[in-house]
Image (cartoon, rainbow, N blue to C red):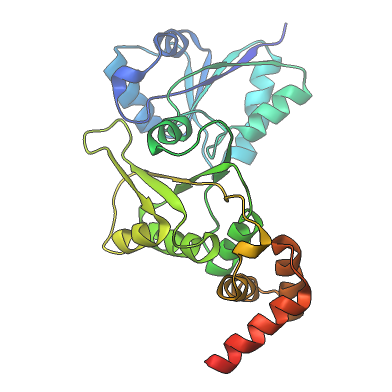
Length: 281
């Protein structure tokens, strides 16, 4: 008989949030694949658990190479437990490759649900939670980041992102540029930890706040695009959208055409707004 792959959620901060089943799985797994074996040892010590199985590292750098080894163990009947540093494996963490490989071999995959930074931040944000999109980490390069944000500029659902603290100010500034400085958002920092903080406000204000430097694990929640009629998009807004697209690499002609479609106005109106703005510079 083949084994079973168990994806185990781990605490995102407060160790007491660990689900009771996590200790059972850590003690009973034949193989534990951990994103960071040192953090795993700290976790097992805090939970008072003695792992009974073999411990191997499974992180971004060796994920592709180690997946076949773990699949082989699963095919041989092993119970393989996958844990990452915090939260649920495969959600912006290692795990997707192993899950896909296990599914391909018709191996059972199950999960020990645990704390989630995505859902915790969403619930604390004060923004609509009935429909949302998780966008993971924005691209590191400025041009790629603008292009990715532009793809979801008209998304009506609430958006959730992860971000590194040293890139937060640049990302919030890019969001303010693409989504509009007045779009509501929440920056959730160090969730469930001692210095937990939720900073809410318009993107423009949050970008200014982050410019002074922010530390810790960051989750950003952004309000979805509001319903807007064509009459609400003034010339200044039309020009801003064209410029955002141009900065992301689009030719002006294509940018004007795209903005006209999304705004529901004739291309000539967008073109005239761009020309007028150019003359006023």
